[in-house]
Image 1 (tube, one colour):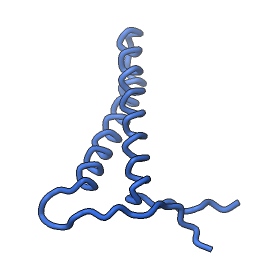
Image 2 (cartoon, rainbow, N blue to C red; image 1 turned 120 degrees about the vertical axis):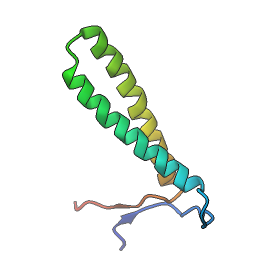
Image 3 (cartoon, rainbow, N blue to C red; image 1 turned 30 degrees about the horizontal axis):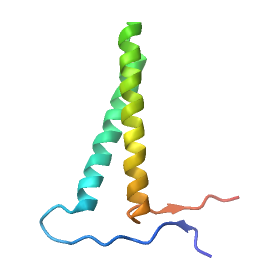
Image 4 (tube, rainbow, N blue to C red; image 1 turned 90 degrees about the horizontal axis):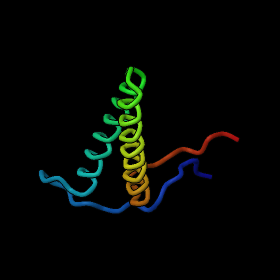
Length: 85
């Protein structure tokens, strides 16, 4: 029995040009970096108003990151391994 959790893979063209998977992977990387940086900003914000604005932006980018990841997983561009029981 396979330990992989995955969907059927959506094939993309190969070559020197970026394809949908490349664009989504680039977007996911950028969003992950934004979320990480906003997390640091949250811990260092000394002003409550500024903290709330950072928190709002953190939540938006964190949700976007999750949506992009889920879209990539649905297309079979991410595989997971089942954890032991």
